[in-house]
Image (cartoon, rainbow, N blue to C red; front, top):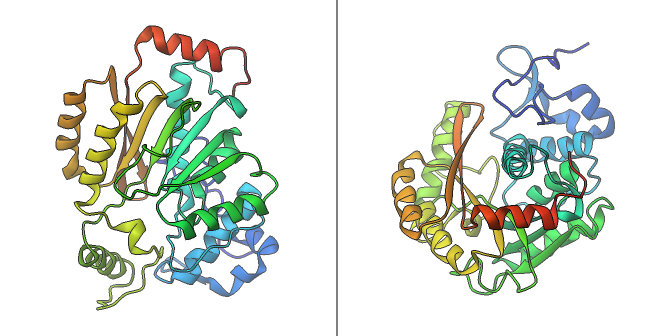
Length: 324
């Protein structure tokens, strides 16, 4: 038997993360034989893939979704971001725990929960995980019509996702909630992985640094190992400006959502983010730290609901419904 170390646990991952143990590459190649040609021993002699190769990374993630999540179809344009599955799952599991805190320790599941994914992307990754793990309903927004079309195609091509995900185009790139949240919507949690670069050059510098860390090589025009077009990665003013706009706009839909959240990649942005949040005076602000490999990110969450309003929300939507 080849070396796969399937029993080795990634202890920093959430207990419910399906990829807490090292990938079972042998089993994955049985159902995804195309993965075989990308598997090679790493420096420790353990079977792995070349994480600096975008094609290999995409093939691995496709096999992960098929083997661990039962997703048969996951195709989208090569120029779009190919997300690392375990890290995206961390976000979903931690916000599920957040919802449970307002529901007597039980995670609300099924059609009673609606999650808004801001920037669903062509890969539709957060809805895939959220539907598979908790059977939540999703609204996915994006400014790119091609991404919306791709995400909808993934939904339509997988029976487990049909009827669970509504894709909505954001026609105004500067808006986040406006034009997306409708009067009849009751959203339990919003999630967002914001664009984290302020310019194309900044994005290229980050890619060069990542490639050098993976291979030790310097590259002038590197291919991004997790792909990603610049609409997904770049926003004028960078991560901080996007989050600042999102916080400001959240006040307009304060009573339509239980919890708002986004993922903060840059620790240097935290102080300014907290300052803006305190200025708009939500009833509660929470920070959830997540670790994937050597990377530490933070989910910042906030709500405007009072204690009485939270209880009413829980009783109306979750109390007498399925839980996990």
